[in-house]
Length: 471
Ligand SMILES: [Zn+2]
Figure 1 (cartoon, protein in one colour):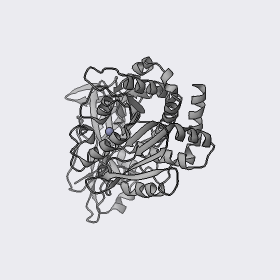
Figure 2 (figure 1 turned 30 degrees about the vertical axis):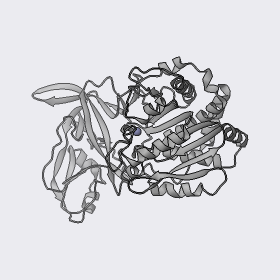
Figure 3 (figure 1 turned 45 degrees about the horizontal axis):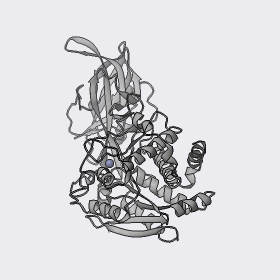
Figure 4 (figure 1 turned 90 degrees about the horizontal axis):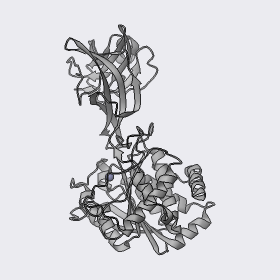
């Protein structure tokens, strides 16, 4: 184990040498990976072949390297908006391509294993940055009927390879925690069951042992942030079906990590996880692990929120009460889905003590006042820019009226929400509403929460905004 940990750390420290810089934005598309795949044809390490075509005619590729008996198949992004592992696969390709001091190890791996990779199984979904394919079918519920072309491509490749190990690579919601730890589930694993009784067979036990080893190894980098995906049997899912056919399947879900919305750190963890897994399978070192380790990995629980404000005083209905307010930021796709803005919503109100926030504020002693609309109407964006934000925030203002025919932004670039229809607007304090309020201490406004983002009233700084536009 000590040697494996040392190896994992060497990957950790050397990662920047392999990280594919072409994929720097999580919303990369098929057109961004295609030249990288073509580039892989120009060497004698990789075999690149077209595995099929998506519904919109995008070629899906199967890459392979090595010539060993142990076949390992990694596929990513069957859900179009789950790209983290796809980026990590290209980092891994660079690791194998680059001249580095791992030559001996790489030759050993090529001798013991044959590695197969299918990056971006669902390129049409990736184009729209959506989970499903263009038939609106969830590929991971189409493993048996296989009405979508992409499900057929994945299934055929699997049938042809009949791998000993399969890695099913996904992203999951940031809202999962590792059990009741209060820590985000950065990486979640699963050895998928193949029946409702969750029977253990040899291939599933092998998956569990490999995950046990990964749990110990990755705890070096993300201690407490590793979870186990719910193990309910899903007869329509690929992992469950492939397990049934006798392969050892490992599901890896990249979840949430504080201050890593782009998941660059989790991509690095994927890189380490997959290379160390491949090495372990080649050496069969995982076989000495105990499945009890797997069984004690905490379950994924939906107990994280983006921002939690604790102990806010609310005065309403001629009374006064104290609540926590939980906020999540939803990404709204713009610019052909290459970009997004945030729309915040109130996820919950009340006792949120069981939840943890990626960010938290103790608002004890602060009273909530709903955000107001400034009575004056602005005629241009420049006019808004000339106003000192603090002077408006001190009055409890969160919304500005604008009458400018040339203004066609999709979100407000200011701290303030923009109202284009001249109407006064108040966001109520209720579930699903946009969090828009100020927090007051003994008659003075201290913080403003606009579209869920917090600003100090007297110290705004030069922050760029992401507020909303009300039309
Ligand atoms: Zn998924």
